[in-house]
Image (cartoon, one colour):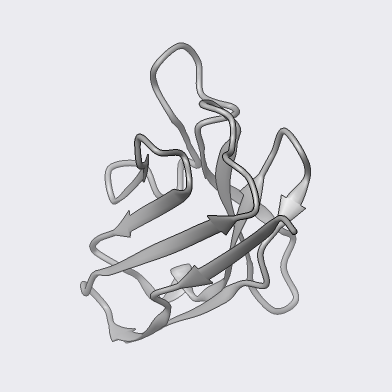
Length: 115
């Protein structure tokens, strides 16, 4: 059974860092299929970082996170990460790991950044 499970969320202060992880089981995802989305209460869902949407070998990043977040995946294509630095209160949201080729979503992990 295909499953995506996120971990690594938590509460940090402004300027702090977190690394989100997504463990994929039941299959091996495609080379350029994965991405991270987030959704804050009352706001639209936002595509944060994506290897699926990225052009060539460069990942896509939302303008709001460029220079602060880094998406990466392991060579075995069973794990995805999102390194988040210089976190801001506006980064507070539920973060989701997504296989954008198969439209598989994880259950999400909460990130809360306090000022």
